[in-house]
Length: 162
Image 1 (cartoon, one colour):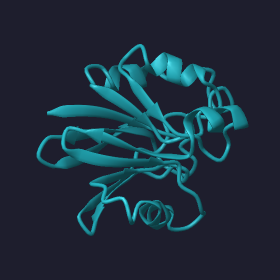
Image 2 (cartoon, helix red, strand yellow):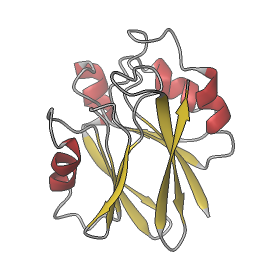
Image 3 (cartoon, helix red, strand yellow):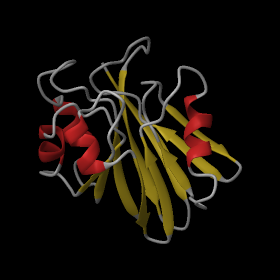
Image 4 (cartoon, one colour):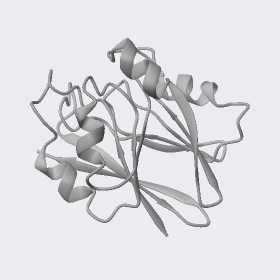
């Protein structure tokens, strides 16, 4: 089984000076990490790379330099599964917008962010997964991030923190 740490909307240093300790604890032992954008600082990737390899995309708050380096969407192949990675957009139905971005790509899972609202649902055999945010919970009761488990299927788990 492959274990993937999933994070988004870290907004460093605007929402926090650095990644919270619970991120490093939760991601201990993961095989790789996906970041769904709104990094604001490339230090976030550097810090996460101390845990595992990182695949990231830029979000709507990221600089042109981050956008140029990471792009705004990618497909990551893990085992025999394809995971679409995007930041997402829109104030309503962010999950549907993310789904529409990968309609033609035959992915097994779509990881997205933007809304800061955790989401872990299957839509037409595709897992739609938003880990929420570990630094800016907005209207959510807790901070969050996620774990994906990949073997013959993909399953997601949202982890919540105070």
